[in-house]
Figure (cartoon, rainbow, N blue to C red):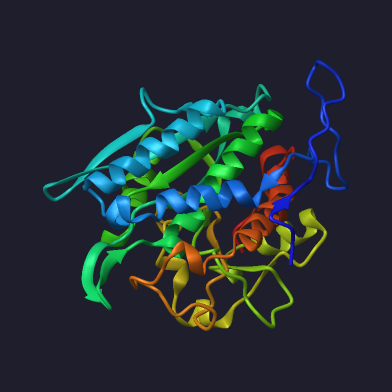
Length: 316
């Protein structure tokens, strides 16, 4: 078992803020399993009542995430961090953080890293508990996006621009991501790729890869990520293909609008977690060390996506 703090060891070499680099060329900045657990414990707490879209609980989650963005230098993309939309009579909003690219040309190309931060709220009671806390689905993915935002905001070397988007309305039919993809398309952004994080709270067993990617055969994303990371980071899960998961998470609206690689990274494989949409989807069931390991493992891949001179991730 990995230690509670996964220390990659930030080394300040000078007052200019230089970092040491690892074999993949990324700065060695700490990814903290304890931080991830702390964020999980708030986002999946009873106080947030399951983060249902349009409720006070998701409002609290939004304020919590926004504070982290502000404290770590992740700017708002719009006038505020909130990108508002409606679902029928329900008022909803995504959260959009922004790091502008530092290359004069490549900064006009965008990468979206996202996860949904809503869940299903209060449901029928099981053994006296009626709050569907949504720890794995998807406080886990939300926490991963927050950690990636913190990492790249500290690193400050992304040539392409990146949007960190937390979606609302996913549980109501991918409403937040459909809204976001449509709006960004209308605004004319040059989207390179979209990477979505979903249900990464527990590890898989008996696999020769760390996580699977939905729509595996749709693009070369997994192949290139494994080349970038130097490990078997992303793999193919047959069940994901059989259940058409490519179209069932927030990656899909971006593919539908932009026809570019847009895929979900996940470690829920239908055998390793029995509490999907269940009141027992609690923080106590999560593995923060595994979650930190996933974030640490995909950073070199994302770093390359943000910095290669050409767009190497392509549709098949």
